[in-house]
Length: 106
Image 1 (cartoon, rainbow, N blue to C red):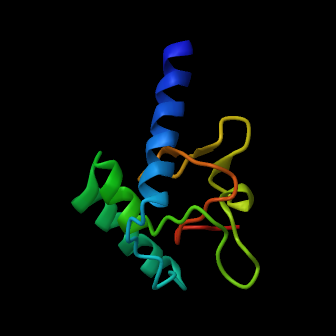
Image 2: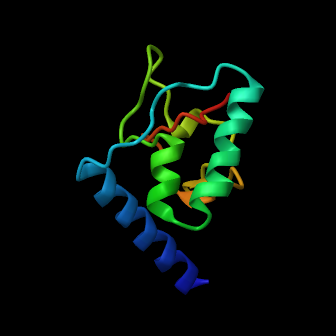
């Protein structure tokens, strides 16, 4: 259990480092319907697999809130609050509450 927690913290730190270093992610287009949403998920499955950096790029991650309403992971339906985790199966990564990705959903 402790090892899992440490791995999650290390992965979260690696994601923060990548985003802070200026990793160019695909924040647009934001999927306006379930077809566009599904297409992004399929790209993640096909192109990223377990490659963390590719997941971040295709998912459109940022280390800050986005949009007019300042959407962030914390309000997303896939966010697990107590674990600080994105539970969307295609992503399945540790995240910070103030981050965002274009797969954000209420």
